[in-house]
Image (cartoon, rainbow, N blue to C red; front, side, top):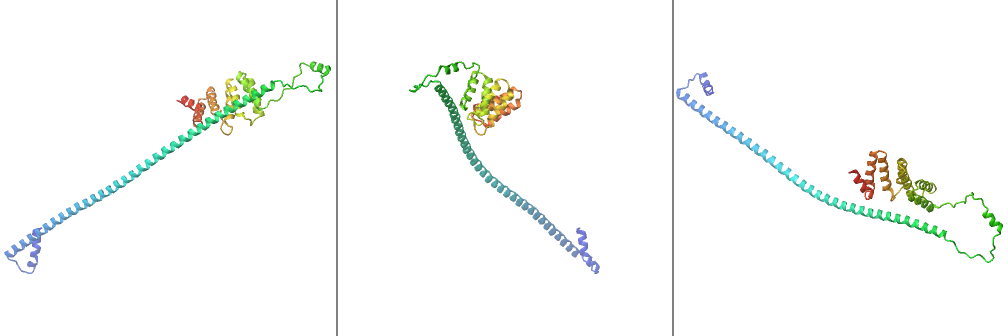
Length: 294
C-alpha cells in the first residue's frame, strides 16, 4: 500500500517530465510514512471510540433493565401489600359471616326445638283432654226426677226387654280427635291391622286435619312393621310432601332410607341419608346418617 501511494505521488512529476531528486523522493517517503502513522492513529482512536460507544450502550441497556426491574419489583411489592390487606379484610369478613351463620343456625335450632316441644306437648294435652272428656261421659248424671214423673207402663218396659238380641245398637260417629286416638291406641297395642284401618279412615274423613301428618307417618309405620316397604315409602312420602315444617319429616325420610335398604336399593338409601343431612342438619336423624355414611 505504501509503495502504491508513493508511486501515485510521483506520477504527476513523471508525466510533466520533471524527475525528482533523491532528496525530494526521501522527503516524500517521510511524508507518506507520517500520513500513514497519522491515519493509523486515527483508526485506533476510531476503534477505541467505537469500543467506548459499545460499552456506553451496554451500560445504558443495563441501567434501563435495572430501572425496569426496580419499577416492576416496586409495583409487585405494592400489589402484594394490597393483596395481603384484602386477604386480611376477607378473613375478617369470613369470620364475621361464620359467626352470623352460627348464631342464625343456633337460633333456628332453638326455635325448631321449641316448636317440636310445643307440638308434642300440645298433642299430649289434646289427648289428655279427650281422655278426661271420655271419662266424664261415663260418670252417671244425678238428676232428680220431676215431681210429675210417672213410671213407664209395664208394656213399654216389656217392649224394651223383648227387643231382638241380634239387632245392632247404632254407634255414635267419632269426631277427629276420637278417631285419631282410637287408631293410635290400636297401634300401641300392636294391632297393626285395626290401627291402619282407623288411620286411613282418619285421612279419608279429615284430609286437612290437625294430625294428618302423624296419620300418614303411622300408616307408614304399620306397613314397615309388616315388611311392606313399598307401601311404607309411599305413605312416608305423603307426610314429607305436606307444605311447611313438621316434626316427623326427618324421621319419615330416615325410615324411607331404611325401607329402600331393606328392598336392596343401597343407592337410594345413601341419597336419602345425604338429603337428611342437608335438609335437617340439626336433627338426630342427621347425626345418625353421618355415622352410617362413614
